[in-house]
Amino acid sequence: MAKTIVDITETITGDHFRYKNFIREMEWTKDGITKTIPYMSIGHGFTHIDAPCHFIPGGEHLYEIDDLLDVLIGRASILDVSYVGPEEPITAEKLEKAYDGCETNKVLLVKTGWGKTVDSTTPEYWAKAPYITPDGAKYLASLNPRLVGYDFPQDYGIRTAATIPVMYPETSPTHFEILSKKILMIEYLNYLWKVPAGIKNVDFYALPLNLYLDKCDGTSIRVVVAYE
Image 1 (tube, rainbow, N blue to C red):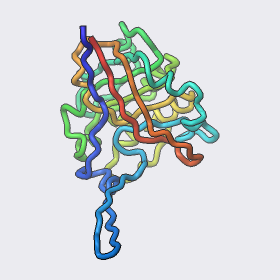
Image 2 (image 1 turned 45 degrees about the vertical axis):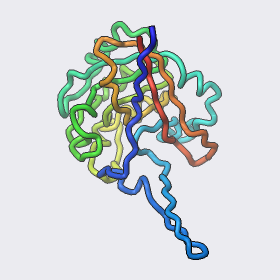
Image 3 (image 1 turned 180 degrees about the vertical axis):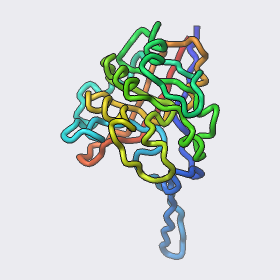
Image 4 (image 1 turned 90 degrees about the vertical axis):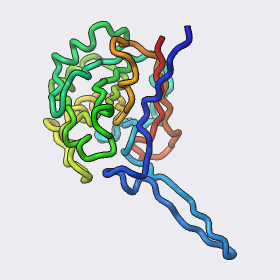
């Protein structure tokens, strides 16, 4: 039986209220000929992976993780909490129930389907999103995954508008709990809602840009899942 493949990477667009300067154009003129050259900033926008060094002093960079591709290619478990509503907290109890029936703890994908409910390019996507509570973040870390991914702005502290948020453990618990345990994070996935309800275990393929930079704490990533 052929597997169904779903690209769960957010679409990169120039029409986004938060990442207005993510995609830019540069005009270059020589010998009377003008060329328009588009280019993209590499930052923590759209679907991206965070290395521990993003938040933890002395934490690992992606290129320092020897088995990175082993983590990013294999099986993943979906923790489906897509019943949650706007601004609803996602607690340890909800996540524990969602983990029941999952076959692996290596890669955990927290599914809310929020991108189906609200357009991800709008302020409402951030301001009204559900969020993970401190005890929820501790529960995810307690499962000892190598990577956790989210299809919504998972921390209350990152839901502010177009500004860079000030982050604290009580308002941004996944950043503190997950990254401090040397667990990788993939933020701002989308289209997980295309995976039917009841599918808890999927094949997982994620490839980040191959960057060797001491100051790079994360990078854009393409993420695909497959199920029977």
